[in-house]
Length: 190
Length: 438
Image (cartoon, rainbow over all chains, first blue to last red; front, side, top):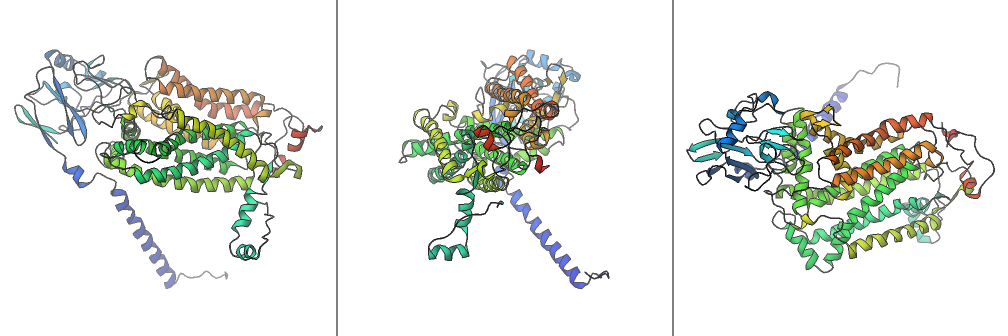
């Protein structure tokens, strides 16, 4: 190189702009290849279901599928409701309601985990928040753990009758899916 | 490749013509026929050849299985049974592949412990070692996706548990973990969509693996092989040509290994698997006790050992899951840093009286973690898993750096030839294995 500083000329500018253009183009082509792995239109289309609650008597529970996930629907007994209501939110490992029908920061009181006027129904996504197993406790003979709710056999997480984590490795309460009562005994999930 | 030049001389006219245009025979001859190999290699050095053989066998049997397998949630489970019952020799080829995965890990673990014991990771073999860690990671990813393909209960729930590991990121940025997990699944839960992409990647990764194995060999032949003394090749009598000496020893090791392999294939094909995987995947029922394949058990034990209270006093609370996930990945990645964690200048543990004991305790730690990973996560098993998890990391982070500084190594032989023929002159205490390189 000569000792004189070479002024960047028109050609340098064109090379720079040309390469930059090609690089941005190549990078933007990555997005379709990443996005194709996300849930497709047919998967998203299955996003709401109707459930008839009439056949579920007090103390019974049913499991329905929503978006490929099991949803626990339990008609709680009086004593199950009482034991969930009297828990102090301050003592819970996860103090948030985790209810998609409510704001994110609402506390995990029993009222916030259920629907006003339908407090006997607890409706949650039946997936342990630890590593995604299905907790036991839906069938009458199942092990329900120390708190009478659900017990995850994989790594021993224990949930209470409001589906809140009480003991074990799971970090969060089981999630309440978006749902609404369409009549006194029917709900729409999603 | 290395400083060694091939002695290949083409004899025919055609050979000369070809050699001037593509010297592949010259390169292969130089690297795999007259390549100088330490004369004192023991049978632990035959595992590299054994592993290359298994990779080739897995690719061949895998290509055949893919001709009969149906990668869909509806067809996968039945097509495996069809391969086992109806396809001509399908039972045998399927067993080769399934048992082959276990044999692959069995051999690779011996290969890694060999490297740890004889200090094969030390200069100038750091890149060789790191490529080995990358190979192990690729093997783990491939085996994990392969295990999902039969679409049995263990396949389904294993995938569910392991992909859910990424949801631990929700504790750092809310929603990030869930977004990653749904991206991996292609849905809101593990489904046939997930199975299809795993099949595609399971077919791809072995070829990536073969590429990295090529680099691993290139790095090996650049630095030259380590050996039980850890000394460098110094004089011509220290080495023998690879063929027929090392190749015939490799063949003996390989055949012995194949006897074990064949015994499993023909007499105990399902011993290393899990009975629950012969129940078709059911998204509504979790098996009472989820366990991964045996080769993942130590890492699984580390993952599960992080509970809301770690070792009686350390409160982890809702970070328990994140800590477990980070510890499990760190347990593999920390191996890549071994060349810099070990401060000793002597390679072989043969001459390291203190480190040798810690090495065997580390082997015991890994076996203990493997046993604990197969047990239910409750009571005393959790406590022991926590203790051995701490031991696992202490070996790398405390034992390796400190022992190298305080230990007085035994006398090293002057050369490989002396170690074999019993030469009289020995190096003084504490002398480096390769002082000329530093």
